[in-house]
Image 1: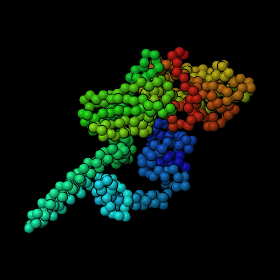
Image 2 (image 1 turned 180 degrees about the vertical axis):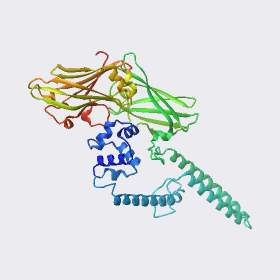
Image 3 (image 1 turned 45 degrees about the horizontal axis):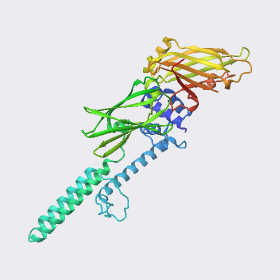
Image 4 (image 1 turned 60 degrees about the vertical axis):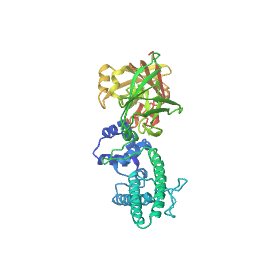
Length: 447
């Protein structure tokens, strides 16, 4: 059973539409459709989310030889899960005692000589061990004091030395626990919780303004931490996913709200954001781009999708005709868009042009809004379909830039099968197959 077939069946069993699942994953409906038709595969982060969401293991989801809907498979998965849970519980109980003590070099104790692994110790376990030690020592001291005054004094001094040493080691262990990677967990509603949700009460990124020369976007970051002190410092690094260069962001805290700014070049680059929470030298790094990278277009542009449907070709008249379907991933930004125009060019000759009227743009401002219009143009004799250039251009009033998507070798001629002729020309969703991306994106202050 293929991955796409599993994803389709799991979704339909949940009585969810592609649009509902796409909104939950923050991707386009076309992404869900392509996953379920095995045209493309989700990335690892989204596969992890889907596995958690549908209550199946990642291995079972990816292995085409495993039918996750068979009774035998479901029983085996449940048995494996229960066995793993019992094993983890047993190991957790044993490790709490074995690793609670350390030698003078800070290494795990050897209370159990067959166990050479180190385990994590929870604060509750440490409190319990400390309580047990103090209780036993108190009883021993009480018994010893009867008739053994000098021995009692020596024992008291020894206990003080042990208590001081144990306290130092507890402080070291607490500092190590505090600097562990951010935990990621799943709550009872099966909603996947990211590192950002664990440490941030809120986190927002908005486009603040554009530089006077029109080359950079001023981006504003606002964050509220779930736990912070007056001396807590928040910083962030934006790493360019193309050249791995870094842009630092420093935040200023006012009444518990952290605010920072960064200037990003106006282009198609994307960035991974990593935050650092520093309280008196105790630092915690948090991944803020687990599902979605940061981009200028994602903050300011409508990010349109153009798809050919029902393409046909008349050999006698050499006429290529069909319908174009336009949708967008950011309907809230449609108000920034004007002068949207679709073009077909062959050898620098304009064969077809179509402007989107105001009403068509307005329809795209709605959630899942779409606009269809027919196209029809004649193909020059002896021309090669692979040489046609397809352009889609619009003006973004916020960026004060004309943006042009351009692709080539992406048109179908001599086909009467509308299903085979369906083709996505432009789609900025990074989860869509790379052939649907614009091969070229340009920015210009002139048309």
